[in-house]
Image (tube, rainbow, N blue to C red; front, side, top):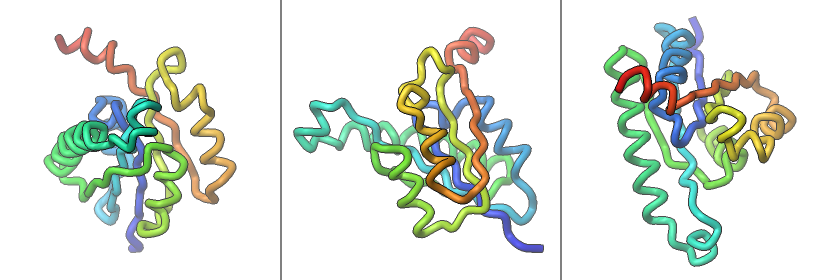
Length: 145
């Protein structure tokens, strides 16, 4: 059976329960995941080329997500990507030819990515099936805290 390659793009939502549940459903014995967390930064820090803090934060979120996936038996690795999520996808596909892409965002009222039409732009640009997962971290915190 051919290996299924799944590219996951998420930042603050990378360790969210809804995303992890979706990835558990999609993962099979012959699947591999690459989780990309764009290193998001403020406009001023970007202009000043101060990306260290954003990168460190993305790496920490990514580490927790990869640990959760691997502890569930899912082969996954992670990478910090470009601050533009569509560019991060393009960069990742160059080295990881995915069969499908999963994009995780906050709910519409709190999602910068949805405001910038990231999911739509990715669907127009890439010839790979794309699934959009909404992760509500506030709701998760209220139900687990």
